[in-house]
Length: 372
Image 1 (tube, helix red, strand yellow):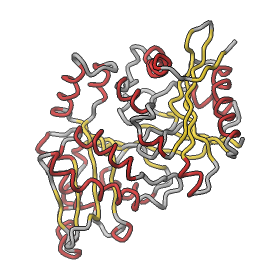
Image 2 (cartoon, helix red, strand yellow):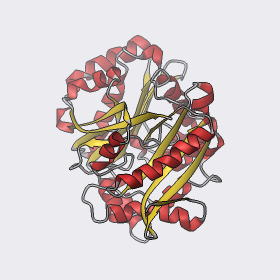
Image 3 (cartoon, rainbow, N blue to C red):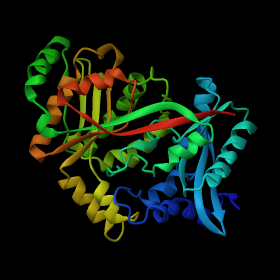
């Protein structure tokens, strides 16, 4: 018999965050999150997502032992501004028992129906900067700090319970040696002259901060047409600025400005923290911070986290400027592999950007939908 209880107390939330550590104990490809980070994500007093969202979290028990977890989320900006009557589910982990999955999802349906919503979709977080999708291919590849890993039975559970695919995401990678500067060096020189553009590079985080709000505005603008996109609010911008920007190598943040200092393109690349997070096993102290800082300094794998181009500059080759600046930084660092974060399978514009580097799709993931 499965019992599902709402997560309310501090101890409940710790159990919620720690359950995957049991489920994936010693798993070679699962990348543990930082426990303190996860707890902050679910803290209404700290995560500004709760200013425009409601959420409930649940744990499933069998014989008084945790066997599953799920979060039910309503992003009210999505519901009210985009008229998408959707309840999301995320942070879903479960043993291979479909009855447990069913019991957890019933709580999500209940939350959605109570709020007069029409369908459920997931797994996904509060916003587009959260993790997304059930892994459906690439189970024998190490995960990353910005994706969920799961066992193959997750998608089988959803399909057996009547869910259908809503969106598919691809993750691609290519060796840095595939990057041939002749594809973009001359082009970027011409593009800079034609449109009077200039790249901005950094060596100190404090120099980046004055531009970060512009970057998030451009992010909202450049992704607005994607069906899954929900804009990041001003409060969230401040939160992400403090939480993430200071952790990213300043030389991996690139901006392109026009003659009036308007931002027309940006990219954020991160060193791969996957192996460092496995060694940290959820804790920064006493030794986790050492592994994270070492990865920040020495990792030879990089993760293309975000890239955005103003709509009026799309299809004008501006990414050549960014690629050139990254090429210089990566060459200095001795980078070996370039990994891309999940991108919508039908986002053909983004796939075109990377085609010269012969990328390989090494992981696929999906969100699933069901009418209430």
